[in-house]
Every structure is written in C-alpha cells, then in structure tokens.
Image 1 (spheres, helix red, strand yellow):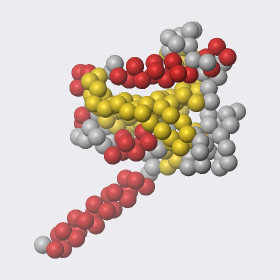
Image 2: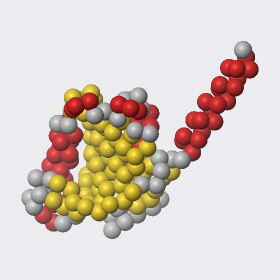
Image 3: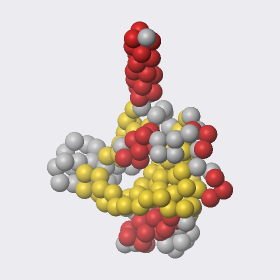
Length: 186
C-alpha cells in the first residue's frame, strides 16, 4: 500500500513539473511588456473595437494559445495617437464594462502590477461565467504608455476546473518594466 501511495505521488510530481515546464516568459520590447504563456503564442495583427477612440477601431496585436480547453489571450491596442492618448481612463473603463457584460459576474477587483522599485501600473480584473454555459472568463485591463493591454483567459466547461490555477497564473504573470532600469515606451 505504501508503495502505491509513493508511486502515485511520484507520478503527480512528474506530471506537475511537466505541465509547468512548458510555461515561458515572452518579451515584447516593442510593446513594452513581458508575458508568460503555456506555449509559444500565435500572433495576429488586427484592430481593437472601441467606441471611446472615436473612429471605432485602432491597430492591435493579439497573442493567443489554446491548450487543454483553456484559451489564453493578450490584446495590445495602440492608443498612442494624440486623439486617443488623453482617453486612457475611458478606454480602461470601457474594457472593464465590456468584460462585465459578457456573463454573470463572479469577481471584480482592482489590480496592480509593480516592479518592486516604485513603478506601478493599475488596472482591473473581472471574472464572469459566460452566458450560454461557455465557461468562465477572467479579463484584466490595463492602460499605460499609450497602450491598452487586455489579458483574457477562458476556461471552458470541458476543462473541469473553472477556477483553474493556470488561468490565475496567466492573468497575473506580466511585467511592464522590462529593461531592468526604467520603462519608457518607444
């Protein structure tokens, strides 16, 4: 019996280390962010829909990985044009409101990403159970240095754990100060 318990614990340890071993931090110096993903993300250029920006769309880049019934996404919308830069608070609020409208709200709270040396970026996290039983979605929204950073993770029902620790890891693993000294957007 003890050997069976020992064997199960070894198997669990090996599985856990293999599952976490694939995670890596990806640096996007041109966007001013470092972000962890469970595998190398797909990258697509596109547009971010917003009514706050006036024109309705702004250029964006979307990074995504789908693995084990979990979709991990990061959208970076370029709001550095003069007509957008002064609307940062409204862009953040719009991101939050849209996230809240996607399902039944389970949690919402302010977020803070800091480097430990005084640079902080404040944002907001919203967790909802998506309508039509599509799973649980957590959205983190940040606006800094003329960009909107929207971090989203959808845990589909087939995954079996709506509050997956992988979702929490993804949504909280980002750095805005990536050069080791200071953060200055290009």
